[in-house]
Image 1 (cartoon, rainbow, N blue to C red):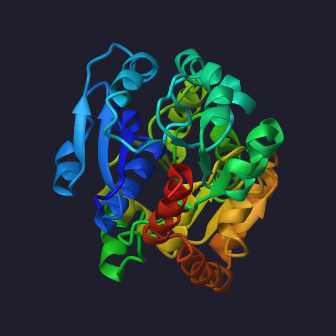
Image 2: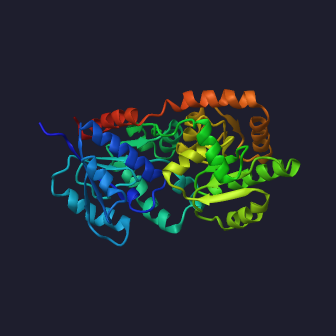
Image 3: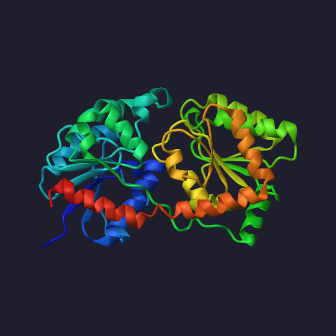
Length: 371
């Protein structure tokens, strides 16, 4: 008997990869390696890194369309009508309104619904009209934290019985650095004693204003505080952040923009402390990656972040820059406390594995396909 054939909506791999794109690629590659199902990726333009997918045995098809949402709603259903797929998986929240085969949707978070002001009009237009019908149409809804599962159940109670939590994984390449690796990246940054690190989109939802306030308060008390390094591209509504970060550059704030995966890992390894004060996260992969690298971590107590870090990080109220400053100060000034957090973080991060996620995802696929 041949393996069931899964069509995968690959729109998340078409633009520059965001968190959803990283999730889609990593989980799909892990799934393909298990060979319990066969996979074909479908999209409106060639996905980035198509060669890697092909090498893993994942076929890809493209049918050009000016917008991904038009392709999803108009062309994808016609492709599925051919009858050569057993299941559709959309890692990008929504499904076609007309979906002729069983389907699974991954809903990472509900920010388009709960925090619409943090998204571009194009994003809201492509998701909000289709979100409720997608949750009602899906055979199963996958989400990436218990916090997101509660949000879905509250706002869409008719879909609550379909929700399954599958935690994402952490690439094993995220590991503590050697002394030489740490020294090298710190020298590259110009911070021989280390730095405070943030990784993620630079936008208001990530509460970067609070982090800048906290770091600047520490710097004004002690000009020798380690510099603040920001990694990630600017997002929606970030004009004020652009100006603020530029104004703080003379004090020691560095915005590095998007970096490749290898440099990202090195930047994690060289940090003294990782800060992630986000207001809302479906999961929050950067804190988990920081913990995997043995970096003491400070997060806000919002949404899924307490669930992700457990007791392995310091948690502060999301709206209190003073509390964030105090937590950063504790880690920077108390080596024993920093070492304790580093050890706990490594253990906590081991909970999140792509092989486990793939096995659980296959169970969801079997449920959805009625096998």
